[in-house]
Structures are given as C-alpha cells and as structure tokens.
Image (tube, rainbow, N blue to C red):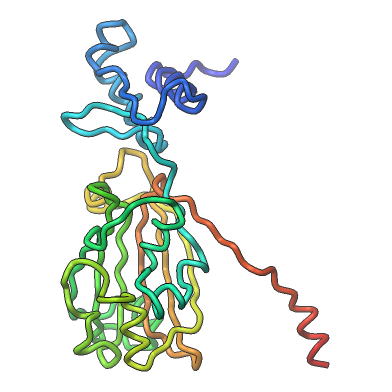
Length: 267
C-alpha cells in the first residue's frame, strides 16, 4: 500500500484540480490561510505549504497584502528561432523579449527590461566562447526582465570591448539598447549576426537567483547559454540567461533537416 500523502499535499492537489478543471477561475482569490485553518483544513504551516506548492507549480500567485489568486495567464511563450527574425529588430523595433510578448498576446513596456553594464574579467565559460584567455576584459550587459512587477528572467550578454566600445550596448539606460536593441547595434557596427547556438539546463536556483526572480521554494530555473556568430564564425555575443521555469513555455518551429539529401546533391 502506498504511503498516504501529507496533508499539505492533499490540500494542494484538491485546489490544483479545481483550478485545472475551471471551477476556480483566473484572478479568483483562494480562501485566506486563517479561514482554512479555522475550517479545520490544517495548521497555518500546512495551508501555507500547500499554497506555496501551488505557486511553485505555476497555478497561483501569492502577494503580501493581496492573498493568493489563481494565475490569470498561461506561461509566456519563449520563442525559439522566430524571436531572432532579422525583420523584427533590423527593420523594426521588436527585440527578442518583446517578440515573446507579442507571440503570447501580452502587453509590454520597453522599461520592463533594466540593465547594468560593466567591464569585467571574463569568467571561464565566457573566455572559451569568445576564444579569449581567462580573465581578459569583456563588457557584461546584465538585464532583469519583468512582466509588470513580476520578474521573468535575467540575461547577461558578454561582448569583446573592440566590438561594442562607444556603442549604445554599453549605455545602462533602462530598456533595449535603442531601436532594434543590441543586435541592431552590432549590425550597424558591421557585425551582422548570422547563426546561433542555444543550450538549456534545468537546475535548482541559487539563493540570490531565488530572491531576484521571486521564486517559490522548490521552483527550478532554466539556464540558457546563447552563442551568437557572424557569417565568418566570429563570436559577437555570449549570453547566459536564468529563467523562472514555471513562467515560460519554450516553443521551437523549424524545418526538419535532411542531411542525406544534401550529401546526395553534392555527389
């Protein structure tokens, strides 16, 4: 016989079923913790732990002074290839995080992205990506992106000084680096991006990341490593992103390759 689930888990599962079935509607408030305690649903610690589990699963939002409410929105679409379409940033002003918002049907403000820029010694992974000796000078452009007041992710891009010195990329003004963002700055400087490699890792957040992203206990993050190249293979950006796992749905749409067909054409 399977062991009985703890009381907080039973309570969390009951509310999760009501949310998923639509019985509890988006933006609807769950009972106050003290109300459930008085109704015999468990101790204050039990109810709080159940609500925190629901928050970690992306079903509710908890805010001091506002109680616990059913999340009104599905996770943001985090586009894959389409978010980097040159027509978006070269010919328009739809930088990558805005492309995700547009695809998700969500509103946005450019100032929901803030940043700090500093010249730092290259960490090992950054040095390897750029082909530099460890400890060489690079520019780090660290961004915190929010949806409204809720942080969604951080992204730190590392650049060689000779590529970005004196450009808008090293300007810490909130929002993208001018019209078209960082990729447009590189384009105007003669470094047109051509291809990328993205690697994803799921992991437990550090204490600092949990605080910065306002994560619930037990909520994981998805770490992104993005290497951006020009057509001749020059690395013009290496970026590390840390994303709140429950706040994104990663979406990739691409043509399926057929390497055998290409080999046949070359014969």
